[in-house]
Every structure is written in structure tokens, then in C-alpha cells.
Amino acid sequence: MSFAGTGVVAIWHDLLPEARDEFYEWHNREHMPERAGIPGFLRGRRYIALDAGPTYFNLYEADTVQVLGGQDYLSRLNSPTAWTKQSVQSYRNVARSICEVTYTSGVGQGAYLLTVRFDVVEGGHKSVSDALRQRVLPPLADTQGITGVHLCVADEAVSKVETAEKKARAEGTQIPAWIVMIEGCAPDYVRVAGESFVADLQRLLEGQSMKPETTLYQLEYTRCKTPGSAG
Image 1 (cartoon, rainbow, N blue to C red):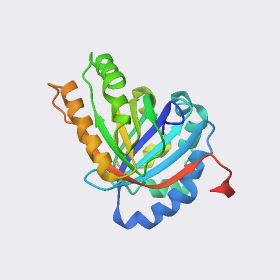
Image 2: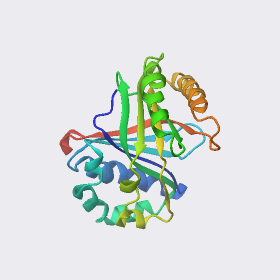
Image 3: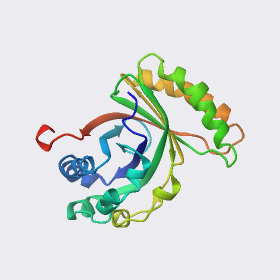
Image 4: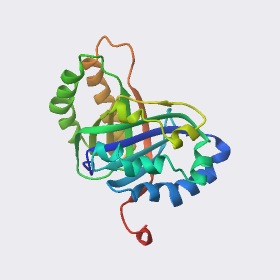
């Protein structure tokens, strides 16, 4: 389905193996409910990788990017709970972007999601964005088995803001600049659509040195803005 708002937090990370059980308890019972409770946050999802790439992908949809750079969210990031500070110390290979949603289309939420991370050279942003939004992504959203296609571009200034929660992690944080997400109802459909998209993308980015990074994920958990008793 289309994203619920125009702001997105996208987070990829690995995890120390011994921290898995505690991570799931914290993330399910405290962290995602806490995030969903922030004004302007609409929905959170967690995915697990089915192929090479960061083990977990976390996606939060918000009304706008302004919500994600606003005081309510920053106050929470700068006042992490003891459980949060303990849990994020087990994160490894973290990448996190706060993004503007520049294209979103779909018919529902899929159980499988491919993330494609890439950069665009300075001076090429408008032409690449226009080509993706007008020519490449709309037909992709109508592909067999695909339930959603989304283009997100990082707000570098907001993504770089230092917070207490970020400092609690044991490693630095990468900021992916451009992200396309492809959702679908079965992994093979998503893989086929992803291969088609990456081929189109590489033609658009011809001459750039870095290849797009792709990882296929399966949905593990969703948290919406509902009363706590409703889950």
C-alpha cells in the first residue's frame, strides 16, 4: 500500500547473536510501542533478512519529515530508557536515514520487502528522481504480485543530528541517501521485480562507481498507532 505519511525512518542493522532474545522482548514490548506513541508517528514495522545484507530492517512511517526532526521525537531520542541503552549496544553495522517520501504507490502491505540503497551524483538528482517517479516506478507497482513501491530520499541534516540514543550504540551510523522499497506477497515476485528495477536503475546511473545494495526481507512485526490494549 502507499505509505501512511511523507516522512520515513529507515534503519538497517545486524545484532550480536547472544542479544537476540533480549532484543525481541525489548523491541516488541517497549521500543516499537514507544515509537508508535510519539505524535505524528503512524506505523512501525520490523523485517528480517532472507539473503545477504543487514539482518534487520526497521521502518517507521510518520506524517512528515518535520515530525522526525521535531521536539517530540528528539526528546525521546535524547532520553532513552535503560532497556534501550542496553539493547542498542548490541547493534552492529547500523545504517539509518530520515527520509522524505517522494513516490509511494500500492494496493496493500506485503509480507516481503526488498530494499535498494543507492547514491546519485551531485547534479543528477532531479533527472534521476523524475525518471524514477514518472517512468520507472509506476509500471513496477502494477507488476505481478507487487503490493507497494516507494522512493525515499534522505534528509541529510535531520539524519545527522546527534542524540543520546545514537551515542549509546557501539558503532557509527551510515546514512543511505536514496532508497527504493518494493513490497509483495511472495519472495519470488519481489525478487523478479527487484531485478527489473535494478537493471533500469543501473542504466540511469551509468558511469557511477557504486552499485546499488539490495536485500530481501520478510515481515516479522507491525505496530500501528492504536491503544496499547489493542496491540
